Image 1 (cartoon, rainbow, N blue to C red):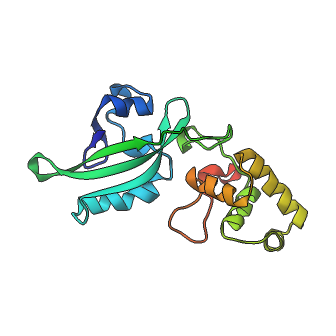
Image 2: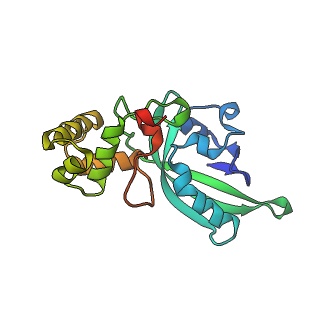
Image 3: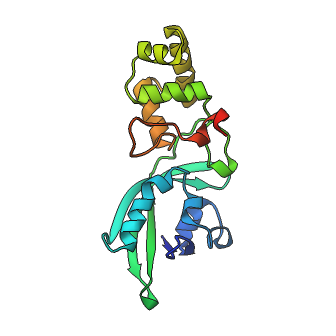
Length: 198
């Protein structure tokens, strides 16, 4: 459990919270909560925190991916609870319930922008976006000026890289790792994960 001030800075945390992120109080206190979470977190959490701040909600729950020291990640359910503090300012208590199983991240898995290496080429990202939006191999080949075999080759490379058996699992893994935009259609690969988008 951690306490956040109105700017979403960690001002207090218990030992379990510190352990989860692999840091000490001096490493964690004073950092914005978004620095501790996957780069896709603001897309999901900004709306929740805004609703807490304006009184439309008293709490929320959302699945997040946290970042441990040493470029490791974990999946957890985050619960945010609004707390009125002295002076009538609003702060938040954040509770993380990590999953029992560790997140299985491929070696080339993305890390946050401040310490990441990109995973996909521009072409791979366009193919993943097409697969995620339901485009067939023939449609992707026509759109990207590739042969069908070329599309299948790139899909096969991504399946192996992400260690998944099929296209549906590829999209699910990419989504769970925060590689795809949240709340927009068609899905897009976030620029942090595209090699030539930097």
